[in-house]
Every structure is written in structure tokens, then in C-alpha cells.
Image 1 (cartoon, rainbow, N blue to C red):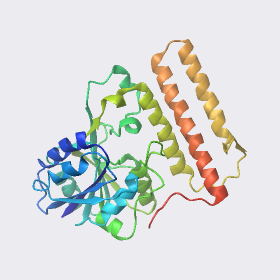
Image 2: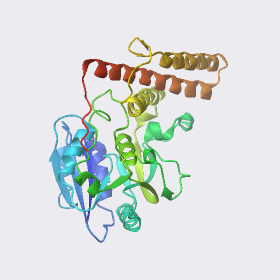
Image 3: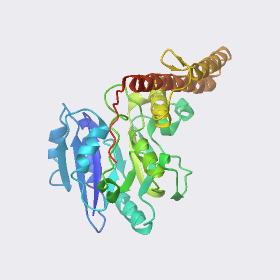
Image 4: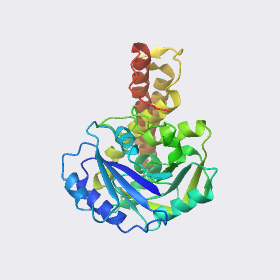
Length: 317
């Protein structure tokens, strides 16, 4: 028995198609359960869920407080079986997805974290410049060249991951201080968990043949959207790497000075690329510039938290 767990919020127009694809899954011989947590939707999400109750082994919970990780923590209370498969509300799995994850978990008892391949499903054909973007950070798409086998925990992402239930039964939960929650947030809620588990000694395995497609909306193919994503990525990576840092460095405008030197360096690179009309270089340097902007924003938040004793991150286990 395994449980598929996901959180959804105001995506009924896509979520109906997602649930339809779930109804075509080949079930593992041990059975499965789908737990959906409605994270305060105000559209027709509940009606969409209700329309699939006779087609899926579906259990629905409501978590009105905003925050994906908060919703997932709520959903873990309804998980059954020995494996929790985590995904998103805009993911379309191939029919053998659950069987392949189930087989990998059965065959690799020394591993506790499993991640499959994530391909893009474009709503409209992508422009050529999309190939310049960091596909993992921008669209949560995995590298097709990754091979089956052991993999670093930070290469396993939310649209396609599975964790043994015993991990959560020990009391471990998602950190609610990172990940999607409103318009502005530090990216990387799933990565925070997998890195934390790796530090605790849990090992990760890439299940290359367990494939899902991540729906990429038309508005996500806008350069400004992608560059804003770089800010979230920078925020998340800085928090993941520096949350426990003791700030002995000199602070300027609420953040360590070395970050401003990085920002200056990337700003110069942007200017040079613009002057030379090198569009690819300009895009890549702009991505790095925004990434550092995100680092500075999150550094200020961390400094404030440490100075005031404020702690917005909730981690159990």
C-alpha cells in the first residue's frame, strides 16, 4: 500500500485534467490511496475533486491556512501504507508511474528517498530562449541524462518524489518556513526536507523510468516570469545554506557585504552583455543578478530573525 499526496490551490482548470490522468494509472499490486489537500481554494476545486470520488481512491482534506508545506503536513495525517509519493497539482504521470516507484522501493531497502524523471509539458510551444534558463530551478524539470542509481538528495524534487512512510512516522515533517506561500517566498520546500534527511543518513535513488510531465503554463514562458523565479531560487538556496549561520561578518543594509560585491560583479556582466548585444549572455547574467538579489533579500530576513529572535520556520523531527 502506498499513498500519493499533493496540495492544490485555485488550479481547478488544470487539476481536472490532472485527476483524469491519475484515473488512468496502473495501480500497484499492493494498492494505493490519493490524498488531496485543498489549501484554501476559492475556485471550483472542491467540485472538481467531488467529480472524481467514484473514479479514484480519493481522500480529501482542507487546510485553509496558506502554505504548501503546511498543507502537506496536514495531509500526512491521512497517509496509509509504507510509501508516501509526493507530487503537485499540475503533474501528469505516465501510466506505470506508481508501479515503477513501488518496485524501486521494494528492490532498494537501503534507500528511503526516491525521485523519478520530470519532463516538461508545454501549454504552448516554448520560445528558443527557454533553453538558456536553468531548467531545474525555473520549471522543476530533471536532467534527461541522469542515470538510474544513487543521487544527491537535492536532485529529487516535489513533482516526482517518494519517501518511506517510516520517515514521517518518526515525527519528521516539512519545514513551513520555506516553499510556496503567497506571492513571495523562498523556493525549495521539498529540497529542504531531502537535504535534511540526507544529513540524517537517509539515502536517495533516481528512478529514471518513473516519469511525470510537469505542466508549464503559457505565462511561465515569459522572460520576466523566469527572472522573478531566479529571485525565489536565490532566496531558497541562501536559506538552505545559511539558516544556521552565526553572523560574525560585517553587515551592510541588513545583509553580509560579500553579497553586494557579487551583485556588483553580475551587474557589470549584464552591462557588458547588453553593450555587445549578446542576448544569451545578457539573459544568463540577468538570472545570476536576480539570484543574488534573492540571496540578499533572504539574508536580510535571516538577520532580522536572528536579531529579534523571530522564527518563522517550523520543523518537526
